[in-house]
Image 1 (cartoon, rainbow, N blue to C red):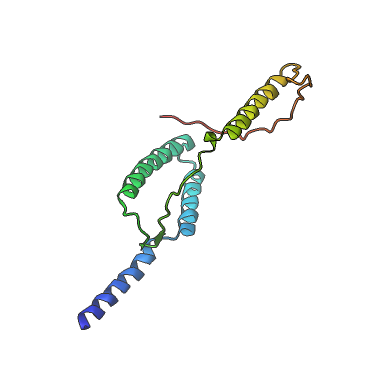
Image 2: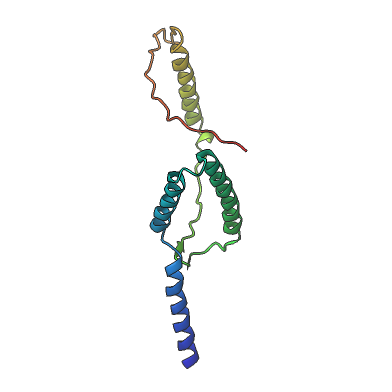
Length: 147
């Protein structure tokens, strides 16, 4: 019984020690942001180069994470400050198998095509009604990266 208690206490001490060097998500985000700002504020680094290296590291870590995740058993766990909860994927209904649903979806797609065309020229629908010019919402600009 004494050995079990000693082992438990050693494991508990290790857990406490581990928590000290494994930051929480919030701490990790804060220190990472501070690190990036410090690197940029020194003026000694090219921002494009730093960004390029960060993307390469992110890609490497994403591949590593995906590979390791695929090896985890499909069960809940708590380890090293993380809590993993396994969720079953469930089922999705195949709405397209319903004739009415499929017809409505096709009608919507056809109407969308008419609305797109109406932005360029005057258009009448099958009922002889003029298709209105709808407003547009700007999309957020983005930066596309490839390597």
